[in-house]
Image (cartoon, rainbow, N blue to C red):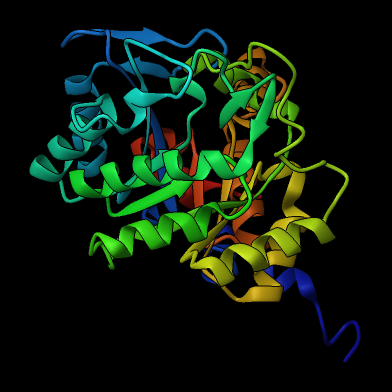
Length: 330
């Protein structure tokens, strides 16, 4: 049918009609909040992250209190990043049973009903800031796998629901799955950073957790921003190795990758709206160049591309203003 019988504007003539015909919806359970816990901080302390407006490094107790506050607003899932007191060449504090992440997991499981997800990596625990074992300034892939497996196991023993390896070492999902199963953690899920790009959008995060590499870069293990076929190969390998959920990181510059991954594999798919994406939008909002509608528009684009789950620093803002998603008139 053609005009005047078909009038597409009927479908958007007022806010009520636009709401009932909305194709993409963002629910609280779709969002995961990444939170930073710093071991050196005492109860009642939090540090503002200069490169990430309205984001903080928390003490253990304050991180749990913030998680509880957000749970009351509708939060379902949280992703933990630890900042230890001490670092060494092998990141041994990352798998310490009394480490900052392990203690946070215990407290969250005791005091909340949240799904607890943990980042499994070595970068913020090592003196060199890389995601693996180093020899002669070379990142050793196979030697790193045993350490990543120990970290994941320590998180599972503390009660984590999902472990999320973010290192991009080859074979790490298989190594972690084997270790978890050998220790009878059959139900601990793996959310793999399957297609993680070597992105300029990570810069604020590296400031947040003090994990910038002391030499070189991460381009030998994180992916080239120019490649998508390689991303599909990475995701396929992680699925074969036992990943339960696959992730694309970052999100906004890689929406085509999110869509391709979801279309190709039909797996539970997460996308990480990283620190640089957050800070970019926040800077524009604070400068008056954009309105807060841009937050929901960005989240909607990620969901529309195919992400089932979105890891985002905007999660508290979304939950605190539950009308934000409902009132947007774009």
